[in-house]
Length: 145
Image (cartoon, rainbow, N blue to C red; front, side):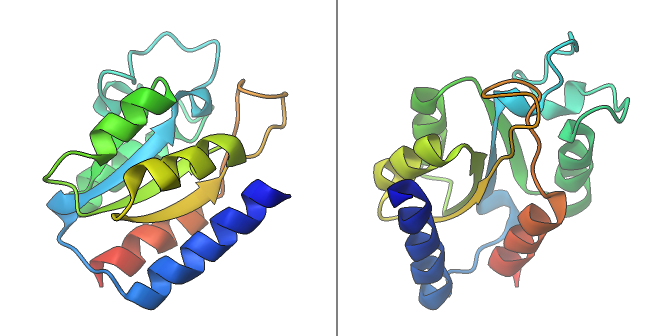
């Protein structure tokens, strides 16, 4: 409950700040558990390695990167995610992860603008998760306006 409240307040504060950026300065940061567990594609190296089989949402994020020019990265852990978000070339972040990781990432990324989207666990924690792609795409569009 506390994590969810922090995420909602953060997203509200980010929208009130009205941060805008160019596509090359926006990072879409994905949790590795969005990739189907049975898939052996090396999408943690690059989402462009996705085979686009349609069995998970990674293909849609690879298409988003190609279509908009934003950086889409799949992080293998919280430390890697924080390091990527801290890079000077990144002005804003759309983060997709579980509530616990999002809370930690929001605080670790301050003062950068982070719009956070929570994942769903239809197969249990940290395995074959999913997210509303439309909500993530809306967050990307919001930063790029």
